[in-house]
Image (cartoon, rainbow, N blue to C red; front, side):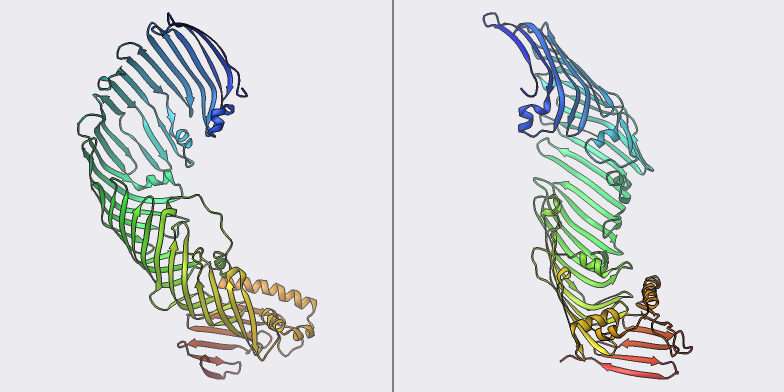
Length: 638
């Protein structure tokens, strides 16, 4: 075959049951075998087989060997594997030698091929590096080190398991990661005799950890199992499984197993003491988790479990049944929990949720009330909108989160407001979260009652705003927003409708202007005709661009709503000079404006705008001559 060639010579005499065998199969390529290819097994290596012998079926004589210089199973390497079998005088001797994960493995065995098949076998390894062993099955964090060693023996009749005896010894077991140290205090021993597995008293100690375990488990008969685990485990050990995880606290155990082999009973308690868990990528962290998990027969009762989450409080109660199948019924109540999700937005909320179901399918339902909203310091409106792009994302591999269905109502307690130096909004929300935990989908409506936006040093006021989520298959907000501003005594209105990435924009003005003029006003502060008539020099244009970059940097550095330095705005002299204007939103209701012409001493203008409520606002202005004017404005819609 394409996998290799084998030569076999066999003679057999039925009358005497005598045989003579010679087999030679060198260099069999495993990955080319039909059976391996048919099942798509990830096996690579070259197999050498040889066997020879003569005798009778009642008294076989045989020498056979199998060699695999290199074997790879799913990219896991085994080298120097050599197995031999020698059969003579109704007895068999077996041997196995190999090199696995930087450790040598040695097995020896002797079996009597008559009677009850008395056997005497042993299995031994040299020191096994745990980092190399675990790396064959999972990702191991850099800096993790560990070592173990295994010795085992078995003796007795293979046909009568009640008379078999086996012994397992792990003389050393230790591991370390960063400042964490953990290991067995003394050799771990387990024995098998009369169909009962007995774990001798063992103790694991390390950084903040002390755990004692012992017990026995019957594999047949009516003997009663008896297992105990007592002690405490430092939660920092979780960092070995996930290096990005920051964890602390203690898990205290006092668990006992009894009952019968067919109906074991588990009882005891697991206490959570000041557990804190967080990651740099998760939108929320858990601190000071305390409580008890009471274990009795077929379920775990969650008692008095509470934690600090996002600056608020989270309480959990309920039960988890683990027999005959895993079922859970857990309630979660949150109070003033601060959640940073989605990116750029910080939400403070209260929640009352219930999680029920099984591993195959469950539901998380309930209600969430939003108490307040705020933007993070690095909030960027464009990046925020990109999160809701209608482009389909690449689906991830199915996992447990795909089995958790969501039915959560999300509502605002009252009017919500959020502010940055560039953006402020006020409104309320009535939403529902559906889909799954792996792919949540938001539906519902958000109304924006008021707000403003500073863009290119122009202040826009929100006239109306509605954001609807009407796609039941994907979170896809649809905007219907109208904003207005005043540029060069023109009242401009911009209407935006559609998805974030496919917005339709329309313009209007009073007095009326063409769309081109309105866009030119917004972009350059002048109409098309005024821009054409402008006589800017090359130096002035370069200066304008350079100063625009500088003012933008200063604006971000100082946290100002608007900072404008215009080298083309001058005083009464003939040389271009600069006018500096800045705006800062002091509170959500108060906007401060200051401007001055640097070529005219004493030309400062100071203005304050205060929004009393949705309809009334007042403006106080002090001009360059020291005069003070007060304007009151009443806003209404027709």
